[in-house]
Image (cartoon, helix red, strand yellow):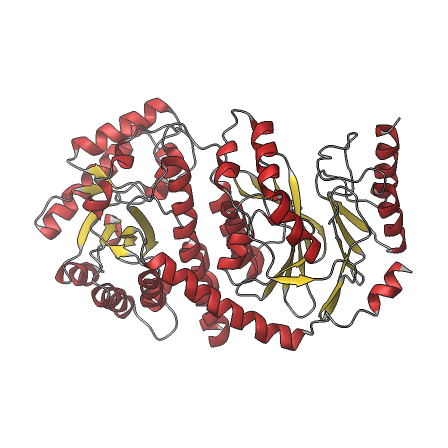
Length: 563
């Protein structure tokens, strides 16, 4: 029997304790190599800090003055010429905090009087907010502030309101301080302070680590967006807040950014780049990164930011996992069962990957999104949702919708398992596959992804005829039931969860689809062998049905295709 035979395969069994050590060793080496590579090509970043004098609570025993001192000490240590944006109605009683900023030589900008929503008040009242804060800061500092930062980054729900607000800002003598690297770190302040109030120093450190990981991920995300939109790295403007997490973790963050080759520059230098002079293509209620707003507006782009904030709530207990959510403009996650998620990369054609939280806390990733960039977005969501977890990955076959993101996994130090047959077929068939996919895409913009993409093979190879068993508290079985959609297509089965990832050998629609590497004669027998696996949830490579009847459906579609 297929299942009993594979259960006896011990030569590829990896136990959780040994795997954990191997994983973190590989992760450390991979991260070091990635950082060394990035160091030579790191971006310029202008650091901006909103909501001065200070926002939200500090941890017990601390004070806002002391916390501000630590923020400024970190900036001075790393030679960061930061710009702080002041909510002027918060100045009374906190003048000494602003003087700290001035004495440190940091520039101050206008963030309005009360931090209002532009779209929730008359435009005339909003104009008074801007002008009054301008005058307050001019009296306080002796210099008229040159920068204005929109509260919530909201610039107007209609084109008319947007353009009128910009005119008001300029009439006050300000330039708009756009943001390229928008962040959701504000959502972590409450769990951080709550942990300290509960006497849970270890829990507070976990939230602090999440703060640093999120901001590093945001920088990488927006670098990807800039490269995709403009074909180059640009000087970035990073948004932070004057809060307890910045006080305690800004030094750690800046050290990590320097390790990635970042150079810190004044805000004026960053905003002198031509990208920030491009026309604004968005009018709406959402506060967005300038990289999303630039015409043409990047539809759905805020999904990445929203998913990060939601993931913090799910991780730290303030909200449940949704049945479905978008984690980037072209990628969504669905909850299949407890601890099991299906990630669907929607472009150029919807394709599924699987994420499973195993019993020893390892995250199993089965197949990748089509590209390294999309896979990085998935990894950033996983880090926000689960924290610093060990991960392992399995490629079920050699196509783009299984191996396309391996470069990103390799950068992150994630071990990637695949069969010797997949490695061999990749070497033999990659060029032909690329030509075929580019031809299918015609003039679609996704064509550029594949023309330049060179796939990275798995780095942990097993004999296809023996299969693979991994043990991480849960047992993970990688099985090759025979040639089908491709000669090398394997499936992944989780016995305790009764979940089968059938990948592209299982069909959800009414067509067989791509048969360039298929064995149509052997395909039905391979599907029949999967009946030995008592799965409740069955995940195809493409499609939205995740039920047991996919095996029968696949056989019917195959039978109809040969009539």
